[in-house]
Length: 101
View 1: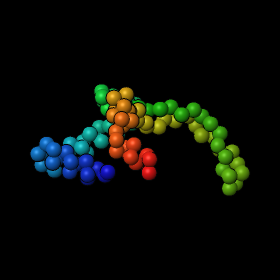
View 2: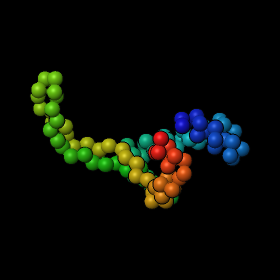
View 3: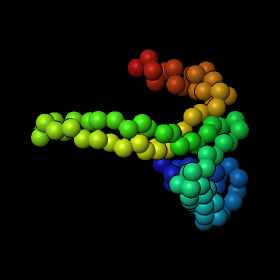
View 4: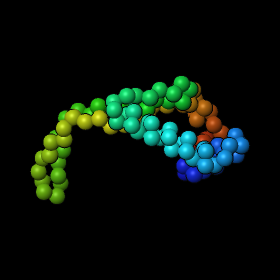
C-alpha cells in the first residue's frame, strides 16, 4: 500500500477532499521527521511509538579492501508497535492466509 492509497482511503471514509487529506498526511510526516531529528520521540496510544535508537560505536570491515572501519555511535529512527496493534495483526485471518502460502 502506498501513501496515495492511504490518502484515497481516508478521503473515501471521511468524505474530506483529497487535497486536504494530502496536506494533513504530509504535515504529519513532516512533524514526525522534524521532531525525531530534534531528538524527540513520538508516542501514539493504541498505534505505536516512533523512537530514536542509539547504536553503539563498532568496528566494521570493508571486505573488498580488507580494512577495518570505525562506525561511530549514532541514532537511527525506529517504530515500535503498540500491544493492541500487534494483537490485531496476529489475530488477522488475512495475515494467516498469506503466511500459509
